[in-house]
Length: 415
Image (cartoon, rainbow, N blue to C red; front, top):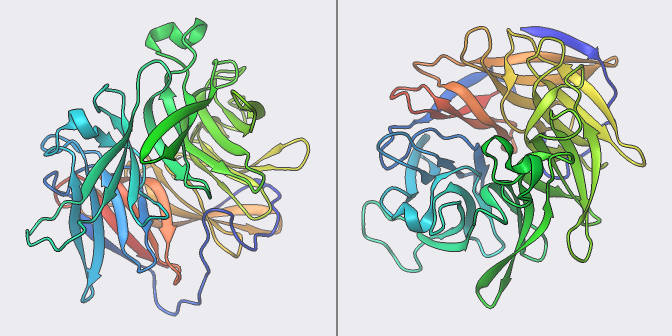
């Protein structure tokens, strides 16, 4: 199924700043495979943050859990042509009061080879944690060998709570966002809010991690930041808030280093019209510094958009694509390839299951190709967290529901 959007302009992409894969010629037909159907046991259930791939091609992820499980971290390894899941950590069995529960972010690899993840709830203070996971230093003879877990930081209610995604800078510092906490006055305390959210930095000194709040939102400049932040070459940070701003429909922001709180520049305030409303998921940046993201409302029919923001000087937003009911609402970050195509996932389409899509620019118009329609009992339901790719152009991701046990799937699409 292919459809067209309104004309939009985009600079040719040679590489992406954060997310890149090379397109190789593929001579066989497109195939879809379920790599793992989650059971809500030791493997967890409800994988909602997407996947991460290491240099050897292994896949890593988190599952937030349902009834039997309150979250897990896992590794998928290809063994003799079949993918095998190994649980790395079970938050159910390891006192969620210590490590937290319902991990919301993707696993991120540090320079030390360990994996790091933001856990949205729990911990000793009850407002989330950042946890380090690393393999045992010696051989483990157990059938299930959980990795060692270390809590780097426990979040509190006032200065930042409910972290959802982290990333490292070149010096090994961790940056992320919290959906609440920070400014505790005015509209940031209305309707049950406990602050409008923060952007923070974690710094390691002698094995002890300390937090610095870089920015706290005040609603008029954004509310409920989501998806973490990304860097440009000058050290500025970029991100989105799901609400707040003049229209209370979300903003795209830039933070520039300053001595105390960093300086915010609002790059775009969403209006709910053709530009969309309620941006969600992480931004993506290409090598030229252009930003790409999705909104989960607005556009032509209220089903969201894909947008681009281009520097320098005044940042101009261009809506590259507006989704329809048949295509659904975008539900994850975007993947850019070296040919300038854009990949992502949606949920809630006409079949109520979701799709994997590809956007292609031709003669000034972006067209959507539906690469795969999910089938809840087998493939999964509500793909979430976006997609990643290997060097051959195969796509990987997760579905939050569906599959053989109805607790979600990890999947592969071979174009």
